[in-house]
Amino acid sequence: MFWDRVSGIYDLFGNIYNGKVNRKMCTAVAKEIWTNDRVLECA
Image 1 (cartoon, one colour):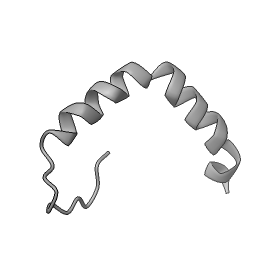
Image 2: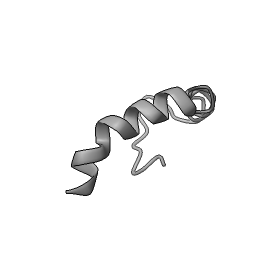
Image 3: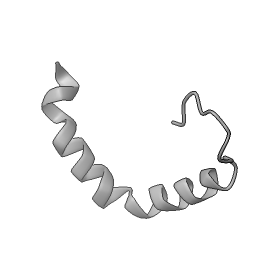
Image 4: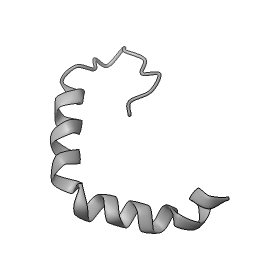
């Protein structure tokens, strides 16, 4: 499968290139999710 082959590179690229934006987004989303909440998808 395509994603199986590129997942390592994709993660590395995402961590380096989008790291700052990702951390800010995760912080903002975390403020909206409570302990008892269920999240269907966060993308």
